[in-house]
Length: 224
Image 1 (cartoon, rainbow, N blue to C red):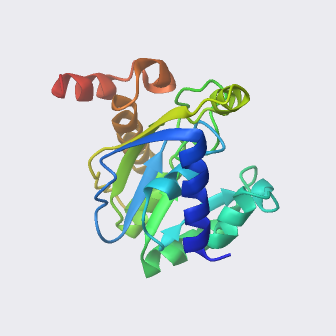
Image 2: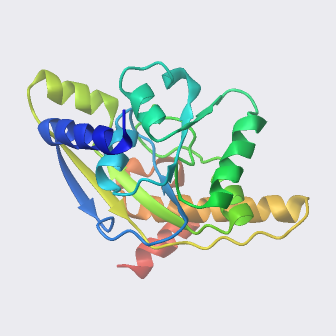
């Protein structure tokens, strides 16, 4: 199935089952960047396809969805990089970097997996590493309303789910070369910056691991 066809189908279905509000994504920046979002439910990927009107998407997808009727179809349409989340999948990682060298829009969830608590989990440092390695800036995106529990509950009651997608400002990541504690500390600081920028655009109940982070409090106070 062609990507344009699948995107039209996804948008049709989303309009039937959800009321989607998009803030800040209407005018995506041109060129290469990483779209980093929180990960609440299985519909997160579909919502991003609904919101993003580009066909040069680079998207890692968990291998377990390869044969799924919907998410497998989405993955094949965007030529997804199938990722083994439980082992160090170096082949997939090399493929991601190779695709990024050619240019495009990288879509990824720094947390790595759906949140069972429906709030932010501690993120892995892979997104900060990819940003530093590629030179791609990071666009933090906050989503609410895509929780599996909520979607199923509303479908059973024939209700549309209110979903909000809100983008922040581009973040440019610079990490010192080499190895050691300084580099790791820089990667962690960059990861925390990305996640706190996402958290700042989420209701308090969604902020989870980052709710008491000093950087989050600083961002919120700057926009008060």
